[in-house]
Length: 283
Image (cartoon, rainbow, N blue to C red):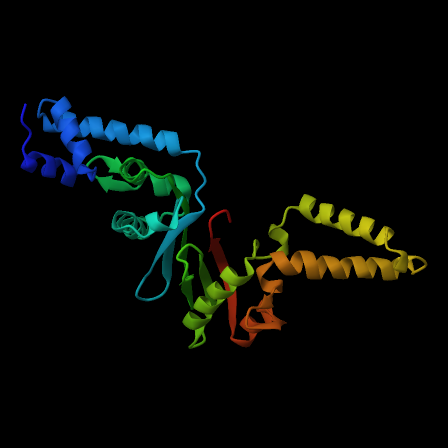
């Protein structure tokens, strides 16, 4: 049967699929619009399944902060290549996801995927359809939603590569608390801390590092004959500097002045960190 250009265009607008695929689907469905749309949706889901195992080393971030600065949300969507993250449909998806996540106060991956997209679709199912349209693996990445009660501000920063960023919740009554929160996010992207405080680090990780340091010292000829107390002091010093100092946010050297710790910088500004999250592919 003859399929009109108008029919093809209507199906393209409804599904986002390429013109030729829309025409083929309509021909196979004998012009039945709903049947053709269902076939294209199934085709997209099959494409998504085939590409699900492919690495997603690129991505895009979007954030929303309330007018009073007390509530903030950041979302991450991953993809395979840089050209795809710059396509209008991918950008549109990420921006809408940020709007929905902020409105719902979503703070976990399950909630992010379950967000109501409209027309019976969720964020997760809509992304699968987008995979079928663009032909590249995409995944919902991370999400964070922070809220400050009392004095303080939410900070957000997205690096110029658009795939690295951070969200922070900083408490404090200073006039510059909002700028401090944003600066802290810049530091987080630069230094990539994993923990807010030492007590968040699993003890087995600390024990493993201590065992490594003790073996290292035992093999060091320059340590032979030193008092046990002095050797233990050296081990603890290395643990503090190279283990805690790299992983714990408050103990890192400030990105603009490495000799000064993050904790000291914040104390000077009358601020403290309530929470933070780093966003980066693979982080």
